[in-house]
Length: 377
Image (cartoon, rainbow, N blue to C red):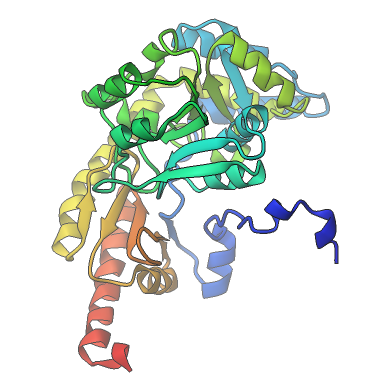
């Protein structure tokens, strides 16, 4: 009845569809144990230092938080070697991306982005009623050369994701260098590096921070939700020129980062031992999973994130539903059609073992179903 009160371009927006909450899945299937490998959370949990900081901060939750999050900005400044004015904070990276879209995009503005990347980009473009120029992936990778060629004087903003979600593929240091060196126009470039901590030890991965001085319209986003294990308290940050920070601060609401999140993020930054443990767990998990997934007839694509992207001769929507009954969640993906691929978070050793065990059973069951001819009836 209220449709006439809503802007017409909002009516066609499809809401982001996250994975089901863990407790809901347990309740639906009557499960006690569960391996949640669908949302790329850190299955080791938060660091001990972050846990301690969160507990201590609870006694101050009757006070409004510092609206400028100065302690966290000071910690980020020391960590990255940048001035505090170069940091903008958000209630998760998604809020920062929302600030960027609201700040720089108006109706009919042109935005260049890749197909099959983080869906929030398109949702924000639609919310601002911007016009999209979508560049296909090339071998499941960002085609930076094609994206650069698509940028014109009309382009207002470009969304980039490295490593890409959901494929885990990445563009190299050389590719990013060529991208910036050959740009003929100067739109706002947003470089989403949510999985940076998993990729940063690769010689092939770019050090994007070095471009902040060279390219003044660059915004780099990072998050505490992935490697730092703080997805549940929602805290992310971006790095950019002080001028851009000023623009973004006009958009944000006061007190948007709560006390607990500020304290946890400061402590997490200092817990280098825990971060190394997380990185090693993911590295060991990949070494375990990749050959075993391959032996099951799945193609595992190269990934620098904490998840693996797989394709194969299966309907991964059906695989997903069957695995849920066994207490394992993965994320079915649509690249060309629904369920033609899947994204699997690398979990703990126990969770990875459980995944392979249940996946063997599910795939055998689907093969028997197809061999019987039932799938064609």
